[in-house]
Image (cartoon, rainbow, N blue to C red; front, side):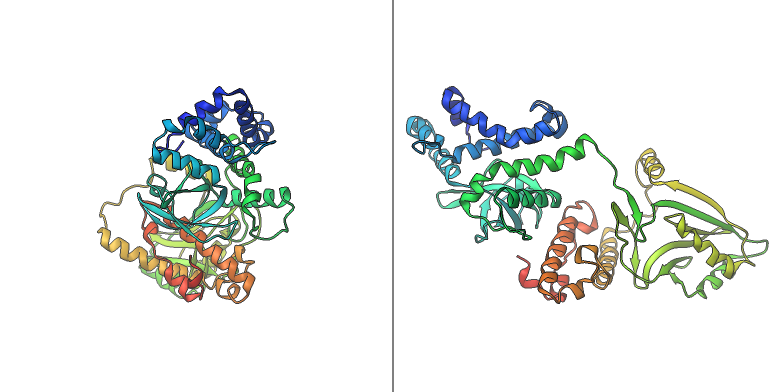
Length: 446
């Protein structure tokens, strides 16, 4: 439970009274049983799967639900009963917190602002209520702008707090929650359902279920996503090494490469093999690719000693060898090919203990400037690239319609949130505000 607000007294009280203990057990079952039965687990198994803390956070969600319920025939409430009988044992602020929990309801909130270690602003996505600033220390050290959390906002005297049952919700968990709410409450199928406080009170167990049904399958049967390149081809790393013919020097090969229309210089001895940008091929799995000003990067070439190296990320893209042979056949010998699967690449990375350090370290200030320029260029290009999440429209195209505008806002929040979570990297400090301004949606960045 939440540190600083001790619910030990009311928990003990509920367990000592047979009627209240039976009601509590029923509420806990509503939160846990659907997932436990689906995956053939006991509550004790959850600690091994989710870690020691998560099961008790979920139990806290169920207990907070229990505190807010009323029971027939006369509307009894455990918080009111406890405070009437034992309230004199509680400190003033703890009593106020219990009263606040009694009246609070769970909802899905978006984090719109964070002051680490101090506070955050939460926007209720399900009721449409005005954003609320809550005092919070521990959670604000890990939560980032645009994160989504299921939690109860608890009024305590002149300020607001969040309850201890706080669950971070991924995009998949949000989608599953929305589906569950729409089915259980027979709501219209809209992107974001609008619910009353009473509807949310009755649907509280669905939040725990959505979280569990999202996390448990991944942890019980972890599978690496099917990786492809942007053409939908299986990801596989091919290195083609073209040895120079006798008497050939790097300057000759470089001059010949500079004359090829499909290549773009990427340094004094490096080129990108480009293809026209056409978006990302649809399909299951995760598509990885690189974009530049001229289009999709299908391969990278560089000169090394007495050889030209072509690196591509699929068997199909070995067709780049034909481009090179046709143009430089009189300078190069047939290539020697090395192939590495994703699994092999990951094992090699682990065996090395990560990337090798460069002998000459670039000053941090220069590194930040270089990375800032890189991100600016990358995201400016992205505004004119088809994005699957936007219906394969570019952000500039999608923002022209009302429906597309909503998708663009969600897409911007997603990439900004993902960037903020890349702690320890230059990406974490990147400022996306200019993209909101350029797309004309800055007023919706809230």
